[in-house]
Image (cartoon, rainbow, N blue to C red; front, side, top):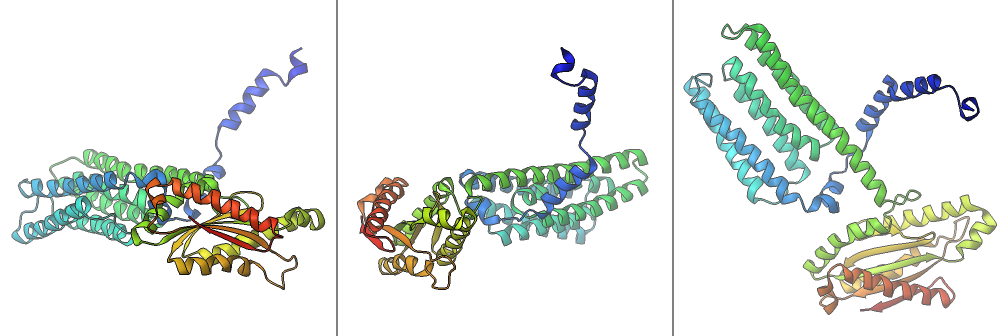
Length: 387
């Protein structure tokens, strides 16, 4: 009976054991995928799961910068700290800059990508310039503070910036370890052990965290995107639209929701095949993306249905709505593309704005109704309503 249901137990266990052992190729492939993964700072900042953490993150990095400053102050009074007046003056200057950076973290707006790069460079170069003024073993201990800059690189900078930071850390930690070995106060095994511990803290933790953060971000982005076109899906619209809603209301612009449905798409699939139908969908998505790349968000919410949310002055909104159908039809297309377009305009001011994100839901329903009206009238038309 055992032979009837599968291979011998020993063989199955051997197969399982070999399956559990990751090969070198697999590890290398994972590292290569991590390194080549595009880094999207804007997505990290705007994504719903991280937007609510902005102030907390700024406070954490502000506190970490104060930790730098506190260490600098303590080392000024330490026997292993800077001894000459010039060295103490330099540490004082760096200390002043650290306090200014901490205030920027605590009370300023969320930094831009360039700001984060500047913070990382300041953290690495500033810390290194101070460490070389300490006695060797004090500098080796202080090298542990590089982990703060590593955390910043992990969450807000690309793989290349992180690797540059890790390379810098490796050089500085190596120098401080060698200095500690040549220093007569501590024995070499203690200095080398301290250097290895500091190196592990500053390299392994940020690197593994960045790999995990990148993988989580990639999976999260995929859950918000349509796999065929790369546009947002319905969940992606729910994530992106509130940001557009708040900025639109703040600027006094009208909010516009547009529903686009490809005319006679079933006939395209039946006559030309599903591959040709996919090509039509991709073509429509590319043209809509080009049309609205600066004005709003575009999503594919159904088989041949697209949703657009954008904002702007009312006169600009009407022009852009009627441009949709004209921009999608090209006389030289192998398969002619016409669409039925429905649009709902939420003027500003309007009582609907008090409903928050629900205004987008109401406008979407109204736009969907307008789209069906355009389709029932024969298609290749645009119908608009104002809420």
